[in-house]
Image 1 (cartoon, one colour):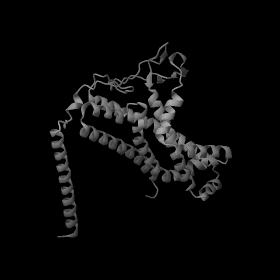
Image 2 (cartoon, rainbow, N blue to C red):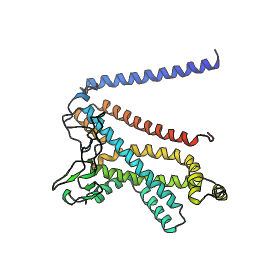
Image 3 (cartoon, rainbow, N blue to C red):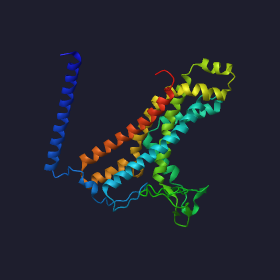
Image 4 (cartoon, helix red, strand yellow):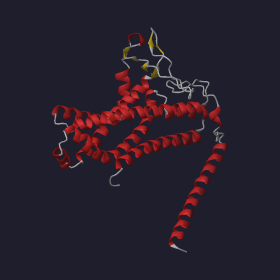
Length: 326
């Protein structure tokens, strides 16, 4: 028997043994749950949920199913993760370049931001943003409004979007937000809980991204800047055309890790009452008692989100490596 065949046989045997072990554990757990009267199927996903959700990108009511509630929680997690990722990237790159600025006041200010935010627990920052920053916002009658946007203690309202007939399940607004005495009518609403979570995640993750950016830029040899100046490039052109492309190859791998961590950190939303995937799944688990199924679904969905984030960033990483060394 050749070495290659022997290696394949060993690996196949190990994979088979591991599969049988997991199958035995699953069957054993299912039988024990049945003996205790705990549901083991996913049929509960078709039952009526019976609870409301304060933020939903698709049509949802307490009469909707548990499966639809789970989708709402997933979409809310995606919404918070995408918006936080965008804002954290902008904040992080701005603070990272500010730390490298020759302006001493700007550099010290960016260093203070990074030092303070990184050394405070994320949960404390989320609660601070919700209780201190958003709680004092005015009611609908005294709302802040600018360029069609409205902000008050009911949430952040954006102008109308066009209605996509190819996806009618989404509750896209048909008109701009309008103020009345008791509420805001129309537009698309981002709940105060979501605003607090996005603000805290953006500031927290942005502080880590700032340090990644600073280290990446400093990893580029000083001779690159001197060579760019010798070719007649301005300082701004040198940063854009020479320094930044080389720095991004160093920045991107740890940046991917920060995006993945931020997606998982969004599970702290339950502490401010935002209906993300974790909060909705906890409610479903408490009502149905289907702990094994709910936890399996939640783990699979979080894994899918992480893999999707990784896939998108890997595509960008391949573009940076095009034509260079791999």
